[in-house]
Image (cartoon, rainbow, N blue to C red; front, side, top):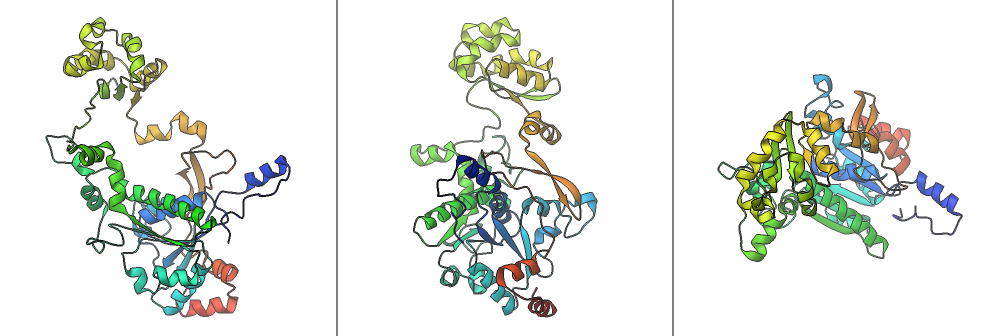
Length: 419
């Protein structure tokens, strides 16, 4: 299967070429075998599916991805097709249920891998080799295979066999040491940020390996460490430590510049940002406080030196105005104001409505439910918003159409508990 076979290399008319691109998705000629479960791996393959890759999610019989058993559940009714986390992380995929404790199940999986472009897995390091599915074995079956392995600490090093959860990798990346009030204990992030950061790196690395392969290279084994991926989120604090020997401290929400934080207002919290700096002096009159024009506040250094006094001068005006009103007033003056939105306010944001960010998906078990689309738009390659699969829903179809198994073959495998 050629990764670039979808690209029109000839010189047909622009109309025909445009029509062709509009009906093709960027990765629709790519087949992915997905051996992932939980969060990081499934999000990586969800991104591949979103651009049209055929993602075959291999699930162990009889229970499938453990995420199917994790709540919350639609309408608070448990069931393998009702897990909201599973439905969210596995959109656009096909489910193939196999018994990998049976050698025949492993043989079926190898045949699928032989016809794949990509394999993504997030087993503990060494588990794939125990199943007879190490990279050396699989590359002999399929020399063009790109294999992406995502694990807590990577495939090598003294910690490679250590278990890790989100709080483990977040804490050990240094992210937690920079989160929270400096006078109190550090805090964990609300979202599973290290998992999703690693998923993004797995996605990017997989695409890079596919492009390299098509330029004459062979397959590749990609080793993604969730803990190392999280270091990306520390930004300048890590750079300062590496290059200047300085150790950053927790600052809560106190930014070095003033004003540059969330303040209480009439109906919540508004982000008052004194930037871009060139716009600040022209906009400061919005606060209806003449003392803000004083010499001590004219320069950024003066506002920093007199932070407490400056903040007390703007609080009365903020208390009289709502957060969205403050947001629009600041933005109309060229300042990057914002506000703290609830999840409901985020969902109803007119910006998302205008860009069609949220999409409705129909599922046979839970009905119509809403998902996020892509946070970017291609001019002519649409994102695919399709539902998550039911457990084993595509097993017979995939094995029949892709591997040529007959109905009798499939019946025998089913009776033997292989599929």
